[in-house]
Amino acid sequence: MSSLLETKTEEVEQNKDSFVQCYVEGGREEFAIKLRVRTKFGDKILMNLGFTKGTIKEQRNLFKRRDKSCNSIMDEWTPESAYILGYILGDGALVPGRNKWLVRISSTDNQVMEDMAKLFGLTLELCPREDGKDQVRLNIWDYNTVLKIKSYGISHRKSIEGCNLKLPEGNYNHFVRGLFDSDGCISISKRGYYRISIAGHPSYMLSKDLYITEHWNQEIRNSLIIRYTDRIDVIRKFGIFLYEGSTIHINRKRNRFKEIPK
Image: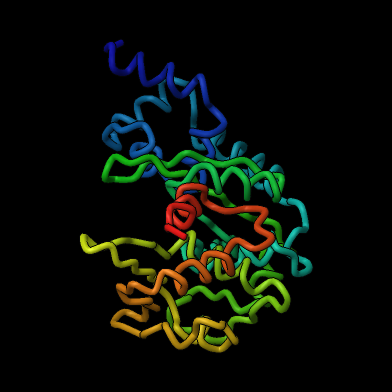
C-alpha cells in the first residue's frame, strides 16, 4: 500500500461517518474533493476500506433515518427563525432530491453555522471547496421543517421567485441581519467614508418601514447600497437596528459596527 493511500485511508477511518455521508449525498466527486484527491484515487480508498455498492446503500438508508427529524424551530416567528430565514435567502438553497426536497446551507463562517446547527439539533458536514477553502454544510431533511420554510416563500430559484417571500412580522430586524450576515458587507474608504451593501432583492428591504430607507440606493445586480457617506449617524443607526435583541450573528461583522466612532 502506498504511503498516500495509507494516510488517506486512515483519515477516512478517523471520521468515517462524515466521509461516508459526503459520498452518499454528493457522490464520488465530492468525496474526492473532501479528501483532496483524484476521483479514481477516492474509489481506491473506499475499496481499501471494504465498501461496496451494498454497504453504501445501507449507509444511505442509515443517514436518511438519522436526519429525518430535527427541532421544530421554524414553526413560529422568533428572533432565531427570522434570522435563519434571512440567512437561507443568502447562503441557503432548496435542493430537489429523488423523492423530496432538502434545505442546504453552506458557509465558511463556522461560528454562526454551528449556532444554527445547535438550534436544529443537527450536525455540520465539512466540505472543502475547489479553491481550497474549507466550508461547512448544514442539510435539513426534516419534511415538516422543509415544508414550513417553503411556505415562507423560499423557492428553488430564489433570485426569480423570491419576491413572494413572507417577511417575519415583529422580527424583521433579525431577518435583515440574517441576510446581511450571509450576503452583506460593511466597508470603509481611504477617506474614512462608510459603505454598506446587501445583495438580493431590494423589495425585501424597501417594502418595510426602515427609518433609513431614504439612504438606500438600488444598484446593479439587485444590491441594496448605502453609498460611501460621512453620515456616521446613518451607519450607526443601521447597526443598532440590526443587532437590537440579537441572539445569533457573525461576530466579526458586528465588531465592524462597534468600531464606528461616536
